Amino acid sequence: MSVDYFYDMKNIILLVFLCCFACKDNSKKDSVKEGEGQVERSEKTINDVALTIYNFEELNPLLHVKDDNIHVINFWATWCVPCVKELPHFEKLRTEYASKNVQLLLVSLDFPNVYDSKLKPFILKHNIQSKVVALNDPDSETWISKISTTWSGTIPVTLIYNKDKRKFYETPFTYEELEAEVKTFLK
Image 1 (tube, one colour):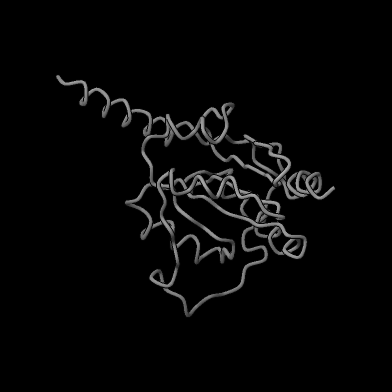
Image 2: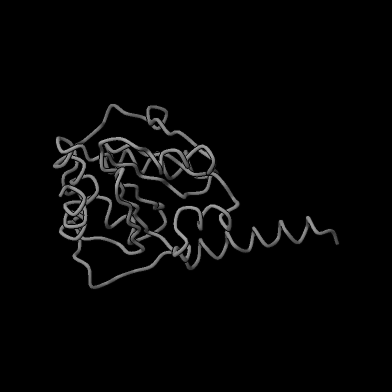
């Protein structure tokens, strides 16, 4: 067997591991009511959902923008229960802090074969107004550590930064916790 075969198998095993075990649940967090803050979008179809797909090298500049904004970047997936549970908090933050130069980016780690069947319908169903992009880069062993050397590979994770400060969070948020962290960047 070739070295390439073992390398490919290692990546496949890593992706399966991430799918099965990467989603942490933190049951002590507040629950979010289904439908909270949603608006019906009966006219939209899956084809209307704009979804930019990046590999890590294309996404990386968005993780290091040097401007006057506070950037909140959440890595999530539709199959991750705690990720889905905290998404309304990010939407609320986007609405309440837009005038304070807070920019939100939701980076989906869903697999490419479900973009049309799961990710786009999820965005429509939950009326997600934040910018959503997909990261399609199977070499997670390389890019995870480039985002944070402390990242174990689980999701949800959030990166908050501005031109002076950068913090990485490997935990789901309640709205109050998320807002408190963002406020530390406003000072």
